[in-house]
Structure formats: structure tokens, C-alpha cells
Amino acid sequence: MTQLAMTGLYKAFGSLPVLTGVDLEVPAGSLTAILGPSGSGKTTLLRVLAGFERADGGTVTIGGTVADGPGVHVAPERRRIGYVPQEGSLFPHLSVAGNVGFGLPPRERRGRRTAELLESVGLGGLGKRYPHQLSGGQQQRVALARALAIQPAVVLLDEPFASLDAHLRASVRADVQQIFRQAGTTAVLVTHDQDEALSTADRVAVLRDGKIAQCAAPQDLYARPVDADLASFIGDANLLTGVLGAGVVQTILGSLPVDPGGTAVPPPGPVTVLIRPEQVELQAADGSRPADMGGPHGPAAAAGPRCLAGRVISYGYHGHDAVVYVQPERDTGGRAIIVRTLGGRDLPPGSPVTLRAHGPVLAWSRKS
Image (tube, rainbow, N blue to C red):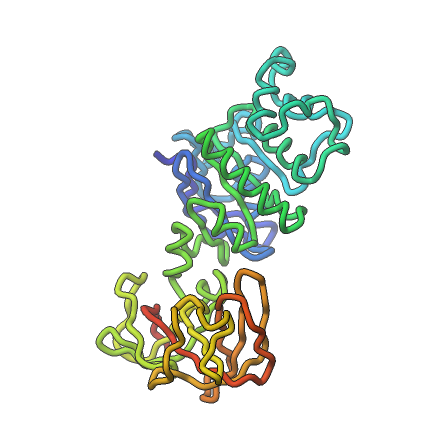
């Protein structure tokens, strides 16, 4: 069942178009992330869904009822929309319980409903505190409880974790995800953080040029983006030139099979090839690997025809893994090749290495 649907949404401010035909369905009970760079129209889309802005064209349907469309505009307070803004926007003069119960009828504000909501977001017993007495993560949980208090048809979240530090952001994100799943709440999260979208949402919709470029499960979006630009936007990507023929593409990293389940397998000829950093195996000149020679692919492989020599440009250690930029000895159009491997021994700039790729890969036609 579709809980929220957008069809042909158009919104402009003066002569500047922001949304140019957004089509998206949000299944009931799902958490859908709308991902896009700053200025792509994510917040505008959320405000149209909430009713704070009126669409210039197209329709918004909530639970099968048109909320915005030709001749129809349901007021925000009648849409049963829960809204969580970036900073939480709690009322400083109200207690935590007062903030949570603000949208409830007066007779319900002092009942069990408020206490139950605080319990559900892990803030049981804190109802008498005030916002300034809470941490940033606790304030966001209060904002979430306030949004859930009205038993909304949909909850909209406008980059609600942006102001939190990295560790707290991950913790609160996981808590919010669990709360929604337990409650069966339909939610839409807008963010410019690819990691946040991929790790939190059931589906991710990428907003580009005022339209949804692709909407898919996180794994499918990362593994099978519809084009090279989207591949670069969703995580690190090595985009190499190649020549496709009979399901195999020839690249500087050797012959690699093309994913037959890709969004569209191009005809034979010149192509752009996507190789993710984790598909590239790195070996130091002494035959070892950075992660004490284990790495994600098992024992180091002997150099062969599919190996490409190069030198390390930079080595970024992230604890759980390392990202290595390598300049190949053969021409790649000036581009370094990105490798993601298990973290371990540092490889200083200039270290000689060999690279080996593992398929399948995606390919898109290009002009020769």
C-alpha cells in the first residue's frame, strides 16, 4: 500500500524552477530517504509535502486522499503530518512533556500518552526537564516524540541529525530507525549525507535537477546506479574507459565481466566502466597487503596479466578500513584509482603497488 505519493510535482520561486516533475511513491510503514546535494530542492519538496508551500503543478496524495493538486490544498494542520526540523525547534519555555504534548488536545496533554511517547524514544522519567537540560541527541528524540504524538499518517524529517557530532549522529539515527519500525510509521527523511541515507532508509530516492533520478533499495542504488554521474554521487567510484564486447569489457585493469542485471547493458563499443574501490585489490611491491597481507580477498595473488602497476598518492586510515589513492603507470586520463582495503600498515606516498580488479562491473555507452 502506498501511504504517500507525488506525481509530476512542480515548484518554482519566481523564474527559478526548483522541482520540475517529481514522481515518487512511499510505501506504508517504510522509511524513504530523499538524497541530494545542498540546493537540490530537498527541503522545498518536504515543505510542499507538509503543506507549508503549495505546489505549482502536480499532486500530493496522503493515504489515498489528494492533499495538494489542481483546485485542492489541504491545510498543514489537517494533513496528519509529523514534522521534525533540522534543529528540533523545541519550545524553550515548555518542559519536555509540554513539548511532546503540544499538538495534542488539552485533555490529553497530561495523560498517559505523553509518558508513553517519552518511554518509546528512551526518555522515560525526563518529562519535567527543559530543553536546555538535555543533550543534542535527547532534544532530537523529544522532537521526534512530539511529531509522533498526533499519530501522523507520515513523519517528515528535514536533516534532523545534521547538528549532532558523528558518534551521536550514528546512535540517534539507529534509535530513530528502530522507533519507526516498531511503530510501523511511514517516514520521509531528507539528507545530503550518502552514508546516512544508505544505512538508515529502506529506499533511497536521489533528487537531481528537480526530479527523482533513481529510487531503489540502498544496496541496489549503490551497486546498480542508472548512470555514471549517479555512481559518483553515491559513494566513491572509479570511472574508467573501456570497450565492451560479448559481455566482457576491456579496461586498463584487464578483461572484466559486465553485470548482466545492471540497469541497462549497453551495446558493444566504447563504454564508461564503474569499478567500486572495494572491487580493487591492492598489493605492495614486496608482495604484501596493507592489512598485514590478509585483506578482503584472502592471500595475496601473484602478479599477472590483469595487474596494473602504480604508485601511492595518499593513504587514508579510517580504523576499520583504509582508502588508498593510486596513480597508475598507464594513462587513465589523469585520474587516480581509489582502493578500499582493510586498515593496517601505512603505505607512504610514492610506494610502488599493483592493482587487480574483480568483477562484475557496470558499463554505460559513451561517445568515442
